[in-house]
Every structure is written in C-alpha cells, then in structure tokens.
Length: 181
Image: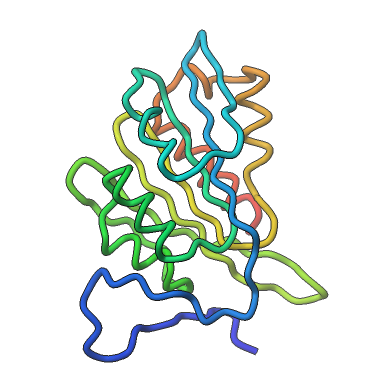
C-alpha cells in the first residue's frame, strides 16, 4: 500500500488544467467562512463559492475553509472569485504533493502533509493553504475536518488569535497539522 498517492496529468496536458480526481473516496464538499478581528467575530457557516468574495473586501481577517472533495468547476469558481493562482489550484486537485511553499503575486501557497491513523495504518492527507494580506483559504480533501480546535479558539476569543493577522492564523493551522504528526 502506498503512503503517498501522487497523481499526474496525462502527458501534454496544459499547466493549470483542472482534471477531476480519480480517487474512489469522495467526501461531501463544504465551504465555511469565518471573519474576525479583535472586536468582531462572524461564523458565516457553509456558503457557496460565489459568496466568499464579499468577505475579502472587508477590513477584517477572513478564513475560508474548503472541506471534502472539490470538483474542478467549484475549484475554478473559487479560484476566480478569490484570485487564486491556477497552478496552485492544480496542485490542490493533484493530491499527494510534497510539502512546499510557493510565492505568487499577492499570496503565498503552502502544502502540508497531515498524517491520519485509520484502521491501524497511517495515511497521509494533503492540506493546502493560501495566505494573503487579510485572508487564509484552506483546503482539506479528507473525510474529517482537522481544524475544529482553531475554530473553537476563534469563537471563544482565546489567546492571541483574534488580535493577530492572517499570517498568525496560517501559523496556527500549520501548527495544528504538525501537532498531529
């Protein structure tokens, strides 16, 4: 059994092409938005891809989390709405990427590996994150959402999380992924 399931496009495919996953495991998709600063907190809950852009136009910190299997059309719509780089979107669909950080105009793209224990074996799931000036967009294609502890901290205003910027949110999410290793 392979621990890393890297997929590649067929030879000759144009860069940035979004091709559906051939995975047999498909999980329901949800897009969840949290928007906050030191004095304000909003958990918008599950929203559609077109609803996300309005949050990025606010002076607050916005966290958009995409959980489950994202089909290419939904991913394309999110990328268009949020100005996410098309090569990074391709890396989200092509799960099994090595951990990395890439710099794009006005944003960073990070891929991390999340080890998960299931049925006595370890599987590695990919977590992909975009960081902008006032936002983080995270993607996790697995069955279970790993970030509920961070949401709880945001809701309760615990610690420095709501008083720091988007970079601190990214740090907190990556710290949680690393804590599961």
